[in-house]
Amino acid sequence: MKTSFSSLALTLALPWGSSAFAPHASLTGARRTTASSPWSMQRRSSLVMKDFPKPNVEDTENYRIGNELSTSFKTSLKSSSETKKTVAIIGGGLSGLACAKYLSDAGHEPTVYEARDVLGGKVSAWQDEDGDWIETGLHIFFGAYPNMMNLFAELGIHDRLQWKIHQMIFAMQELPGEFTTFDFIPGIPAPFNFGLAILMNQKMLTFAEKIQTAPPLIPMLVEGQSFIDAQDELSVTEFMRKYGMPERINEEVFIAMAKALDFIDPDKLSMTVVLTAMNRFLNESNGLQMAFLDGNQPDRLCAPMKDHIEANGGKVLVDSPVKEIVTNEDGTVSHLLMRSGEKIVADEYVSAMPVDIFKRFIPKKWANMPYFRQCDELEGIPVINLHMWFDRKLKGVDHLCFSRSPLLSVYADMSTSCKEYYDSEKSMLELVFAPCSPLAGGNVNWISKSDEEIIDATMGEIARLFPLEIAADEKWPSTSAQGPQGKAKLRKYTVVKVPRSVYAAIPGRNKYRPSQTTPIPGFTLAGDWTSQKFLGSMEGAVLGGKLAAEVVANRALGGQPKPIKEIQQHIVDAAKSHVAKDPAGVKGDGAIAWGGGATLTKKNKDLLLEVDPSQFVQA
Image (cartoon, rainbow, N blue to C red; front, side):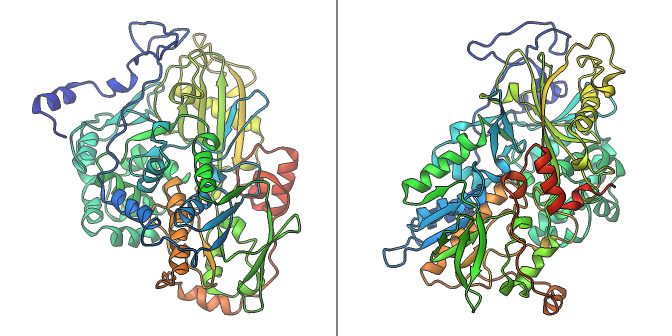
């Protein structure tokens, strides 16, 4: 695709962000008001949803690699009646479902055992008493998610992605109520579109600062993954200072990126995470284009995966908690003991549990193995997801917005951006509250705070984002300085706490992420925290499950075993003196017990205090 010099010049002449905030074409049946400016005060916003055509996500090397692996399950890895295996998969999140999907494609018989009453793990969602959907997290799909894009194509559900304009939108910290953008010009290939988007923006960095930012990133483009992996010992802040990057790049860009990527501040986040993301986005022309799912994740994503698995002869079971991984004398898996007392015997076993939950299941006979001891170096990061319903429509954008707030990561008005949640009269903001713990760089342990304290703090930040619209509300002291023009009041909210979300990508952790292949015959690991290049994300979860399926399918055919990733020597040495104990197992029921997110009722809080008391240690 090419662009003429005249169209390029026209785009460069446009004021910043104009396309992001202009009123969009109305949806069928949607009510709309008019105004001289989309920013003018009005009782009802003129902003309505507009989706964009699916970008070309297929013409990248990563997509082709993902497609080749998908195809292999139906060709070179396809089983026969003699090599067909029964596979028990613990965990019905994206990684467990992806593993089962690809094993079923290869002709095997997987059964997914999900402890909760809902599928999805970290993308699970449920309905409240009003019928409103509550999501564990605000999930965005990127063009640079090659295995996820392959999965959508294989399931025939690409039409469920609502692609937005190719743009990154940032709130202006020093100018409340104003936003600025990185605009990606159609037809300009990567990496030039990314560079041009940054150069065109006149609000965030000076030209000199932009020039200073480029040289440290050149080795990433030249040396690739080897350079990226070597930076894992450095935080984002340490990397910047080592390579002489301007401090303002941290304030203007990296804080927003770090909190969006792993809910962590830059002084705590491994630079490998940022470089991995940037490498994908710089090398793929549509890598940064974003899409929203058109509805709740269990129905719109997990259900098609379940249907596919079951159509191929597999099973997906909910309300099926495992109590223990029972081993034989030689350490191999004998069976899974369910809480119901049932014994599950299979040819192969896969754990697709989060790392913090898996550590509670490691059998005593495995406890001194360095492979499993390295898991002690990994832990999930706390994060909070907020749903906030207002009594009127707020002005805003039909997109994801980087808040650049001390307390918030990203947010979106889901009543504008998502078809199932669409409401032309009232806004529902979904916001990621991060960092929310000292581990992530925060000054307050917000997991231990009440919902009211969290919402009050958030209302203060929302008042900065919407200074002319949020009303002074005596229920929320942080809004007390709002002027009389503000009318919007909060009518309902839900606080979803995820005490242990994706693994904490602090410096030095990447080397401890285990391979999918384990030292136990017939036992494989899946999960976004296992070793794969897309880190802790939806893409990482799908790829982790896919790689686990490859290990199982390859072993079934008697192929050369996939290697076990090198284990650090200090882990090997320490494992020898480790005192093995019986596994702790999982106590209680529901999302908090099994590593998910939930509203923290008294029951949930008491359980969390018992099994993870560090969540209540004050900073």
